[in-house]
Length: 232
Image (cartoon, rainbow, N blue to C red; front, side, top):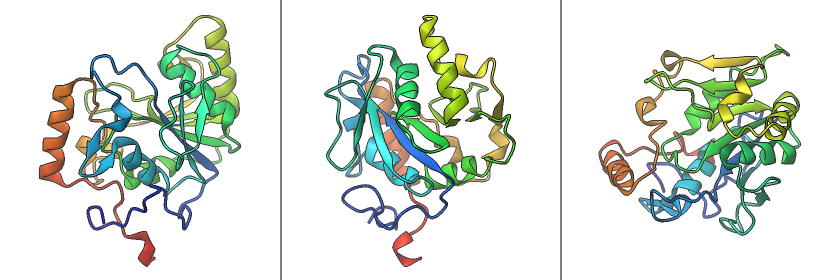
């Protein structure tokens, strides 16, 4: 049990997503983690790694969850791994590989160093998928005004084409995906009513960030799942 929610050993609920909207989930792993000094995907929070927490949260709205990263960065046999097509391109390379791999119209793509995302966040983000063909990405904005491209929804065809164009031009910044496309920016107030919203985008870069995150967890008891879905 995790925060009152049953999380299976495989981290993905075998009963399938409850809010399926033609979405695949991807977790970006395999970065250098040079400032942390250890693999961020393996950092543990009350018995669950950050990747396991994110996978559990994603599983509520996705058909399946996979990791994405360099060859050899596989997380576990429970989560299939997608290898970067272009090595050493950082997050944009991971987004590109995820979009190439997905068979669904949309992909939910999350960095492995965001341990406090929840099912409620992804249900809310997916609720902004509409029939508007012009919308190619759904991207939250943090309280400090920064865009969060590494916890966002991407429409496969337009975003894959844009990513390939950027990579061919030598661009490595994920935010460049949004310059020419139609993006639905999710303002902080559109997420503020969700439990633990102020901690969704707590990011782990350094050992002190990890310690601070563990302290937040000890006080707030943030669960990746808001319900025991086995009872539904």
